[in-house]
Every structure is written in structure tokens, then in C-alpha cells.
Length: 72
Image: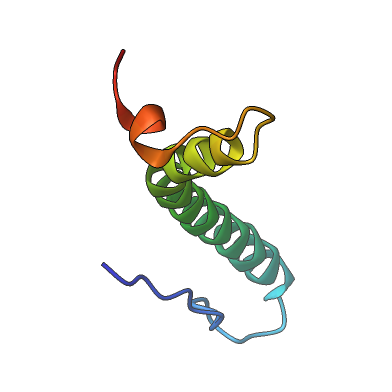
């Protein structure tokens, strides 16, 4: 479940390693963006309904909690 982002270069450390550094930076950026999007998906999934309930509780007519949760 927990994925780690490795910052180590996987290429040979010779004189011409600038291309592999750029490639590893691009790979690191892809991994970071994938990790961020997965976390954002989980936060959105579990946080949307509580956010709606909180916004409903702070509205002007001040409904009770059971009124917000009832389908009618």
C-alpha cells in the first residue's frame, strides 16, 4: 500500500550521465504525480460526504443531523 519514491540514479555513473539524470528526474516526477493523484483520490473519496454534511450543518436554517441524513 505504501509506495516509496527512490531518488537514486539507476544508470551508470560515467561522464555521460546527464541524460540519465534527466531521465531519472522525469521518472521521479511521474512517480510523485502518480502518488499525489492516488492520495488525492482517497481524500476526495472519504472526505466529500463529511464536507457536504458540515456545509449543510452551517447553513442558514440550521437543520438537525438526522434531517441532513434522511433521504426525504
